[in-house]
Amino acid sequence: MEKDWREEYKDGPQLKGYPVGTIGEKAEEVFKKNSEEYIKFDRVLNRRSNRPDLHAFLLLDELFPGKSDIVACAEHDEMWLDIESKDIRKLTEEQVIELIRCGVRYDTDNDSLAMFV
Image (cartoon, rainbow, N blue to C red):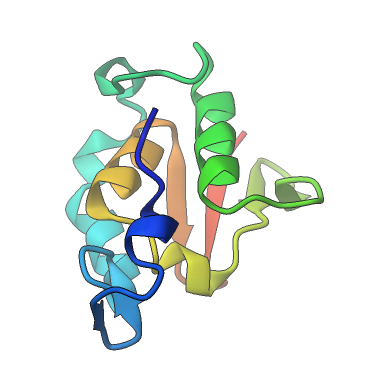
């Protein structure tokens, strides 16, 4: 099981308000830089599920536990996830790559995570 980053950075080193090692304000840049990993689920190690979308949901729920549905809204062929923008910035680049491999993308218009269905 992955180490819980919240414990490691609880009161630890920070860079511009975000724990060192996280993507901070560079969310869009990190997602773009790793776009070649999009839907390459075969590269995901330690799968939480054999289904890419479910793996992404489980990973996000482990990192940012919630009490409501993880799908915040949907329109036509796209859905947005209920992860706050401040939490997106707490992801590490490795976690971003894992999410991209599951089909998660960063929606710059809404500063949120989204997936095509």
